[in-house]
Amino acid sequence: MRKTQATFKLGIEFSNWGDIGERYFHAFGQIGRSTWMGDFQHLWQHASSLGWGGELQDYCFELQAAKAGKFDKDKANYAYHLDAGLYASFLSELSQKRGVKRIEGTIESIAMDSENGHISNLVLKNGTSVQGDLFIDCTGFKGLLINGALGVGFEDWSHWLPMNSAWAVQTEGKKEIPPYTKSIAHDASWQWRIPLQNRVGNGLVFCSDYTSEQDALQLLTDNLEGDMVSQPRLLKFKTGKRNKTWFKNCVAIGLSSGFLEPLESTSIHLSQISATRLVQMFPFNGMDEVLQTHFNNYVDGEVDSIRDFIILHYNLNRRSEPFWQHVATMDIPDSLQHRLELYKRTSIAFKNDLDLFRVDSWNQVMLGQGIKVEGYHQMGRLIKDDNLRQAFNDLQEHINSTVEGLPMHADFLRQYGVLDLHRKP
Image (cartoon, rainbow, N blue to C red; front, top):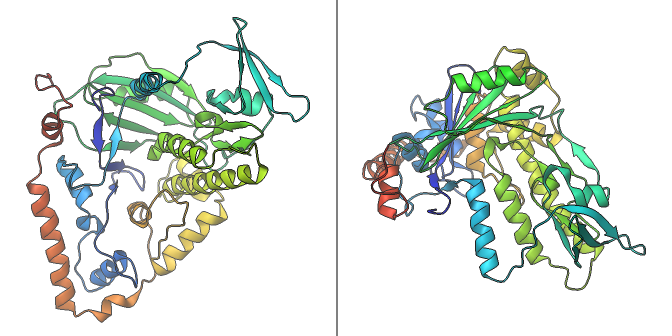
């Protein structure tokens, strides 16, 4: 955390996503207490039908801590905010200390084995030849190995996720460091604010079919909090995935394998889990196609689920602007349509084996985006109303009292030893 200027992250605050002026949290914690019969939202729906119960978010500790700007790593489920460039440098230094050999250069050409079509070696501009049995393509959107050499196609998801550009810029740090990301929807774009120890990361993701680069840049700079400490950078991308992540003797990891916009901050996770699975399924006995298919099935299952979760944010909006009307009325994947219909009719949310996001996450986003349910499991009727109400009150009081005793996030970072005690706001 010291090396990457990192902070802790309890979730994401979404503003103006359902409609202008609305706000909700996607927190990374558990909501209420579920039973074997059904999840907590069914008990909450029953309580709501009786005229009490408040908001579902009242029963999530991480969400209440985030709203209060407080944190304690021993009490919460959390992720991290970090500087990706510093993180890459940290990993590079760590790896080389442990024996990894770094050869820096630009790929000039890629030599192929004429018999099996595998990559045999890379030729750099300085003439160096880098041979290998297995190659990991980390060449970004270009996919020089997986696509350039092996010709693995790309499945374009722009018809579901039309955002294709982003401006990014850094602003000065603040004294208060909220333990969550902010995501603010605009007319044809959304803006992020990510608080680090030393600065705030900002960006605007937009669709070039609905707004120009200059208008998007102006919108971002008009909505910054604090002075810029870097020049804005324009990034262009296409949402989708490779038809195969592992093909022959090449595994694509990171942007070379595909891209999902950073709405739920999943890119680093996808790189980490692909690297982990490659270790678990390492081809000690050669490039077995059955092994590769197994690996690719895992990747596809997880990426497809994240894709649906991101589409959910767009599709469940009630805004009037042309962009938002388009994404609200577009056809969506059958897998997501099934989730939505099931939830609308029964309040049932579920997590498949390869889903990254838990039931609590689906609940928070679907309800936060304003979905209206028609029914729910009646297990709440098995509990006396007074007993159920007491259980809800006890849970809420426990959460509130625990949050009250937490330190502010910046204070915890100082106590934890990662934030400079003499740091100026």
